[in-house]
Length: 204
Image 1 (cartoon, rainbow, N blue to C red):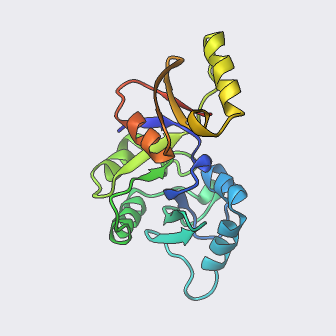
Image 2: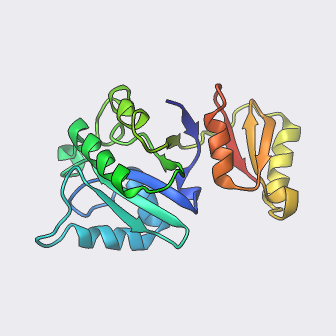
């Protein structure tokens, strides 16, 4: 299962999934990054974990972050911190519920759920998503390029300031070279998933 190098918080439309605890806390990891990007998500999740109908493990709670973006909150952990270890059974159960809610062929973008703060082995977790009826695309943060040709680096810096027409496209780079460009962000990420070697995506 390919892991794309991309910052998921920059996805502004489509579908995202991530793992959460059942205490209403989004204070670390990708959940924290999402909560900082969408403060209403943090408020929603805090409320969802209160009262008799509070969130339970092994479930999927969809949240409409914007008119264009839906976030699937997968309860893969009961607690957070040192007691917040995820469970393969909870990951599997939450994915099964997501499958019943996701009524489109659009991909769902996600980090390596459960294998960060959740403490699970990604080699064991990934098959749950790989065998799902939902097309999942796994993304991790983009590392800073180390040895990019200066002319490419200057092009990328210039394009970042020009988001109209050709300059506003999503450009897929491999080894510092442009492979393709897309008007739609999701098309670019899907293209990356079909490339055998590692790529990095630069928004210009």
